[in-house]
Image (cartoon, rainbow, N blue to C red; front, side):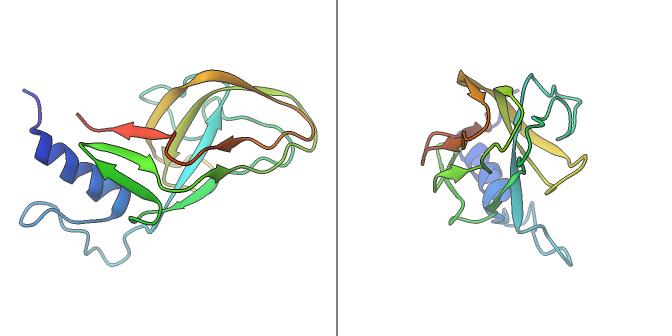
Length: 143
């Protein structure tokens, strides 16, 4: 049985923007996370993976923090989209072909993977290349 469009949109706002759903989902934990992290992957991290599965390994790489708020994400019709460009660290050495991107809960290590998906085109990264995700081009859905 599918979720309603309204609930799907509310759920996406709860996850990406930290907005509670009245009488159902409260974000008043003693320390709810205020930041999510975008990671890059050379292959699908899978539904049972964590943020480290197939994560890129070029020198200089680190995950990018995105505010868990309307500043970091826009949500419309159950689709969450990056509200600003996402600029990763410049590759200082090494080579990777980036095929997937993901949203997770940790700045490093085996954080909880929330969403992942393939890029529309592979991105070749080598020394001097700075991966950038343009404003509004990274989307996650809840349907």
